Length: 401
Image (cartoon, rainbow, N blue to C red):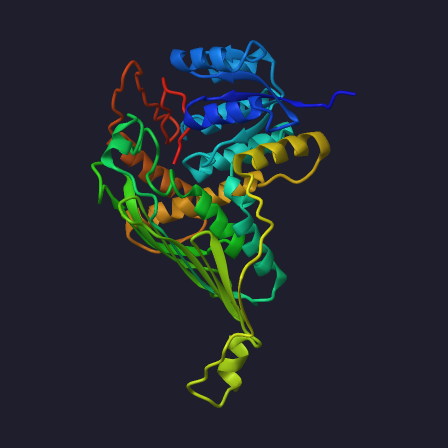
């Protein structure tokens, strides 16, 4: 008996969308049948016709694909502002949705996406593929085990995102408030913001500095430093930039009974016999020192399926009810943190999380109004400001980091 497969369409076949198509068509997702692809660009439509075979129907827009009734699920890989409109149209047509990161640009619009999912009973999830990485899964398992106690402090410096001016000049929508909705926070860092929340919990407040066009000729942020406050009293520092060469990717999580440091593809762990909190108030030694009970490299299962893992988990959820890699609410939380960091940088003050969505939307709208979305090649860009956001019409592409 032939195995049941989810009939999937990919909307937006730019860099990431086309890669998703290749993986599925190449048999890497055994419970998924690629049956349709859509893009506004004729060249990409032609690519799909030539490379994906006659069994994959090709459409000139995401709406045409949705209206065709060919698919029961879609993978959305279009510019950020178009995520909500495309996902909402699909869900209202009875189609389940896997959407590329970030959920959208504004937390208020992400909340609307989730409301639509609840109203229609459709599945909505996001491409947080770094959760499949054995390194981060191993870190989460150790934190959840309680062996290191409660988190006291986290620091993540992630500046190995280096990009040249040519990168930003390669797409007219790139690094503009109207076209992309943000810079390093919204393009490069959604995965890290999701992992930060997944591993350490949601911060309650942030004080941040977001430098716009510090290292490049762009209008959005390319250098961010954020001080985080967590509900249990823990503190955090998050630093991201596309202007450092060579850059650093180092995540350190300090806990009551030890710490872990993730760098260079491995996790180093120090584990103490007692809680530092107990030692602090019971030790008679003002210069107390102790060798850790254990000091080791964290062992993992070595599995890191990335996008394939997310797609396969999405299909398995639809077919068998098994857990997905992330829930819809995870996409909202990552955006709430991102929005709060942006707003703190814009207003120059401490912001409680979640930030007031009307304040964020108003501040973003000011920047969209002053934004310049350039013309590129044969694609015309138009901006719709009617919903405190922008919609880039004319280019349907994913937003590769």
